[in-house]
Length: 535
Image 1 (cartoon, rainbow, N blue to C red):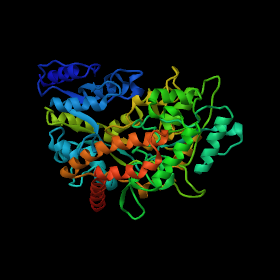
Image 2 (spheres, rainbow, N blue to C red; image 1 turned 90 degrees about the horizontal axis):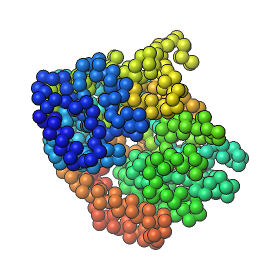
Image 3 (cartoon, one colour; image 1 turned 120 degrees about the horizontal axis):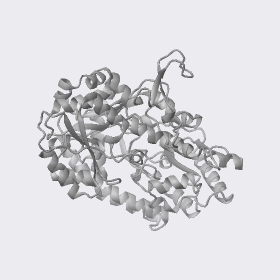
Image 4 (cartoon, rainbow, N blue to C red; image 1 turned 180 degrees about the vertical axis):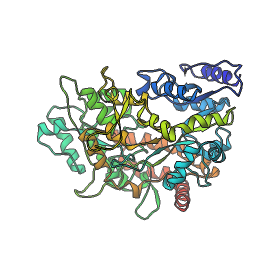
């Protein structure tokens, strides 16, 4: 009955919810059934309305004989639906969530609120594959525990093995064919960027050379996930970062943050920045790239460079993309910040207190961390999405999991991302350990491999905050402070760039941040960093 009530309540609260594989409400706790809440990627939803229908999970349910009901929020409404579900206090067995940033107060608060369970004893008792990896990879283990040593689910890991760095996958990109047409080099400095963007515009290639999504969609002009590709050129950040002194700072309080605003206001006035950067949704952004409406942007190795080249390879007018290094002010400088992910991610499949069968939940979740389950999560179904070979170029004589043309050159014209997402979890994230042969094939193009090489040259490891956590009191303070500051910061940044607010008011902007208790937030982040370093 609990599961039926859960489905009915969430369906009533949020129209458009996608359900799969409904169950008999009379099912007992002995039944091999689970419910899982997870947002559904657009790469999956273009083919299947639910993870239940994907080849990956059809295969997994067949192997384990566990009947899973997936609960997916409507596209673009993950946070709203999650909050409604928590407010209802009708929870599924398992929730997949990024708990550090996706729950106010982080995983410790989620546990104290009764949303998820503390997993330390559960994992030790029922998850041998997961614990084997955690016990043999101390750096990854450090990143997925709270300061108190609490484990809160089955986390997503990136393997540290292999020649390609799985932690670097985001950065600036540009139309290489346009550069070649105009006899221009890949830009390195901010001055180079202005010259290139100006040439793109004056040559008639485009009216708006540099494009972004709206703030919060991961390809924006400033984004906490990447610290701001162009902001970091001024040796600061859009968000919290670690200064050379080792102290935590908040970028908008730095005087050089104003220099970034001066630059982008100038570029905006000159028409070098797409004016729709304020409101551009993901689909519209992708269309701008493939239609040639913009000539430079920031995006990912695979769902950016790879996906766009996949789409355009059979086009009557194919184009080429080049990755660029993170920009600097002076040629030869090392970029101050870049994107570098943690080996142990705070995304986790977490069991809730309302789960009737914890051993069964662990049987399902632990499968992806070793043996055939790890293989399934990374490569899919043998003979269908991959085959084991010993003649893979560059790895002759080694047993190698080679993706088939179903993934790499899909006969129906689907992208690698669309196929990889429905056959594996390695292509995005999930309860598994991402293996580097996945990336070696997914990022098969020279431009993609060059991107990883270039973007890894940034000094992210020094200046980027690791996955720190806060105490319950700190978390409450931080959530209150930053919810207001985040909104204010985004509004003012847009106003400064578009000229709605004069830059002469930048000092007043910083004063307002201080009145909104940003210094308390910095203090909390510093305490979290100190505790993390002492783990």
